[in-house]
Length: 602
Image 1 (cartoon, rainbow, N blue to C red):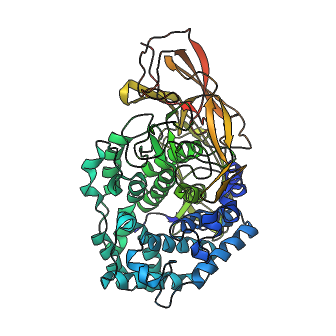
Image 2 (image 1 turned 60 degrees about the vertical axis):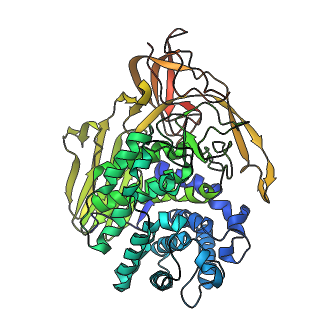
Image 3 (image 1 turned 45 degrees about the horizontal axis):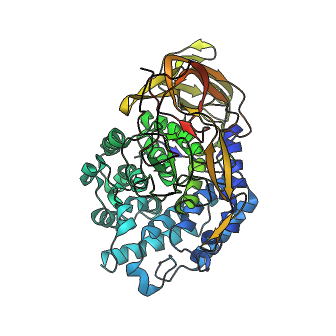
């Protein structure tokens, strides 16, 4: 059984900088795709003639919780319009995806798995009484088709079979029917066993494969957690075993695994797909809720505060397909792409650079992260992720006032109608933790809250430090934030139409062209942290809320062979060619062009 349960969007609301981040998202691509992107606006899911597979379910999976978290009535009505249309096209036998009956055998049922997950999210937000039966009928039809041999899993459905368990678990909690367990077994039997593919993860290949595809792998990490209960199996933390292999051979400074699109090794100039960031975050949210193991919460924070904002423009109207840890330019490659299986413009900021899946799928990342702030189990509440939020549920009101991760003070205002147990997860890296002004030494702070009003004040310190990376390079970290040397840049805007899709301001494409030096190495181990007020753009690329001062000197780093806008994988020389200077390092998520993995002067 899960250790912790999620609250719903009517119980848990973002506040402070987190609410502002969601508002920026609602004002940009996420809140407008149904107005201007044909694959959403005119999708076959709602009776149009455009894409009728993953893009509408992907978009709704984030748009729905975003709408309800912000209590945005217009967005809620637009979400309902889409759900109403999708439900209206459901066939009598339960089939819901937009394809002809005779095409079902050739239709990749990844879309079935995804739409049932999205409908589950919609029910959790809306409490629409129609939805449980709709999902039940979709899954029953899926079971009948699979068990009768009329369809089989292949391609994406084969690689992502475990995604269906979000809906299976939901429906089983209501109906308790045995065929749901049998459906789960069929999916696992026909689906990919990733434990049999780990040998492929050790050496990157310039070859596209389902079993090394980065998004599949990031989704896969939660498979044991979502399927274990219905199978009645003991949890053995297979995710940690697989995570460690991925990290060893493909890890990045910000907790990602390289994948452009497939696993790409340990090079700081290979990329990671934005879909993978969103899915890895969701897997960690599920893993923490299921296990209560703090490692998943801390890993989630690293992704959310570094990798996610790094690959989105400040206004969230544009995004990259892939990000790089050492990214000195986002300029279309004139010849052969640097990336193993992505095109030459995958790292540009735009509407749908390289491919549109991320345009639809990145929308889930911030809203679902916000829903991970507080969790519960019976009469116990835990503050799992210490971000600004308000909880109102079952006679409990908890408001957390904080600017974490930009600073490390936390004020909890509690008003309870009855007694309850309250736990605050303290990060493992916290130093000199103080509770109401007094030093404490504990992993978690546990309180027995009595009816009435209570105030809890916590603060701790975090120090900046160096951490080794492959190739004798180093990264700088402070608490949950990774820091990079920012490269100043100008934007070159491209407005055009391709395949009937307009790119026009503000959702046009941009190249980011460097305008400052990037060829540096650390001169010594001195690091100084400076904190400022949080900007109205929380992860501002121009005015970050926290910086680290470091001493650096220029080196002859060199360019990657064959490229004019990519630094070499490793520097040609580590000897200083300039005087030492103090420079401001920005949070990785704020530095759109950056050097993150750097050597020390030799």
